[in-house]
Image 1 (cartoon, rainbow, N blue to C red):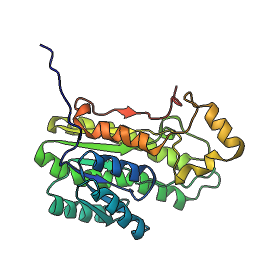
Image 2 (cartoon, rainbow, N blue to C red):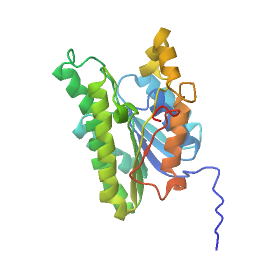
Image 3 (cartoon, rainbow, N blue to C red):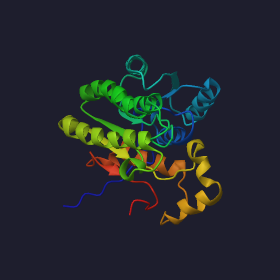
Length: 257
């Protein structure tokens, strides 16, 4: 017999979400989208306390609880302390969006060991650091959704982005391994691989001939918006994706075909 489900207007009512690197760009859009759908949001930032407090205000306007944590997701001890504080204040963790990331683009001949390591530590190390912490409350609750922000570059590679591509490719293998380990505990782990999204990190792609070249390679013929990635994260965070784990969703306008 066919069952018909009527989904609530708010897909994440009273869920508790952590979003790393949420003070701008995709992370900010994700935090706002989750809050819009009823999730209480804890998020991390590193640089601007002013921006973090402003985002707190925008989030609580949705009628949820929100708190900014100044925490470096690339440092294990800081992640451990932050997640412990979240569990103490919010009670649990239902959703973790590992979004924190940087780029240090350079040709391999010019890429320094320090640049390489910084990108690996922040982009890939942070995913390990946070996932290691949030699976404890998730295992206790016997449910959870972990969403890792990779990149289309992690799938296809890109000249001048060896460190970035390596870190984002590593996230894919990590995601599938975690999905296999924790599926029996009803904890799902998926990845999003955004294409060229209009953010502070990618503004240079819109300049001059480079912009035309990139647009010609995208079947949809435009750059993506941060909210479109946030919508994908909402889907993976909610019960709409309850039978999806270990997958990579390429939100790239068809760039990967």
